[in-house]
Image (cartoon, rainbow, N blue to C red):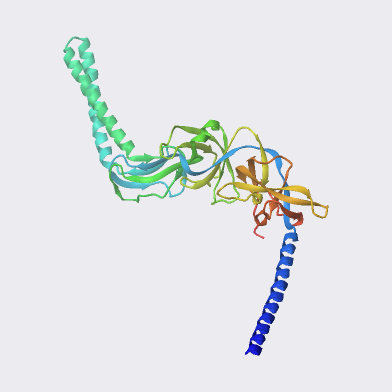
Length: 378
């Protein structure tokens, strides 16, 4: 029994010795790994850089607008009647006073002939009454009655002439006429539409701006107009009217600008993008838009700063700095606060950095940055 006990004790001590050796070896390995981790320096990240550029910009306000005809009406019939002549084609340009539609006036013309005969007779009677009155052969009442009948006959003739004229529908101004809504022989009721007539040279564009824009919004300011219908084309105009009231629901003010439309490509109802330019230039600091890290708690950029490395050599580090942004144009964005002109910043690759990270500059990979980029189909 004593021999077996000594044997088990020896085996236990041996196992403990082996476990102790293994724990010691593993502890030494972990300690070495911790020391190596503390001494490890991550390799520098490859980024591109850019200088904070100080320049001047002409401030602009962007808005979405709708084109409105300079003049626009739906030409209609003032009186009922049957159409005897249609003198225009859909989509053509017409001049002021041009005949568009003639209604049947045969009844009025017959009545006019009778009214002219009555007028002639009333005139003769009035002239006789004047001569007779000179000889005191009639009373003043007889003369007044003859004059009244003559004027009534004249009024009847003028009424029939006006009716006949109203049954000739004319263009009220120069413009382009839309698709016609009548046909030859059709009987029109009073007020029935004939066609829409629009004057589009020049043309209005109406848009809304926030009430803050009123501080520098004036009549005569230049505007630029673009539309997706004609990519690359730009129309220049001027602000012609600023509404006298601000919409209480949106706190926006309606603005109207007048734009020349010599070629007639702009048409009422089209959607447009409008840029309202301020009259003065203001100083701004510009950085590439790719340099900005956008976040709910604040936008930031990484500023490049030189620093001595552990080996005593110079190296660049990226320090995160929060900024307040202004207007954006193309690939550039204005910085209101947080940067100074001439500072070097990370222009691309900032998403993989942390504050204090070491970086290496690879500007051969930098994309081209423009305020007014022109995309290529190639």
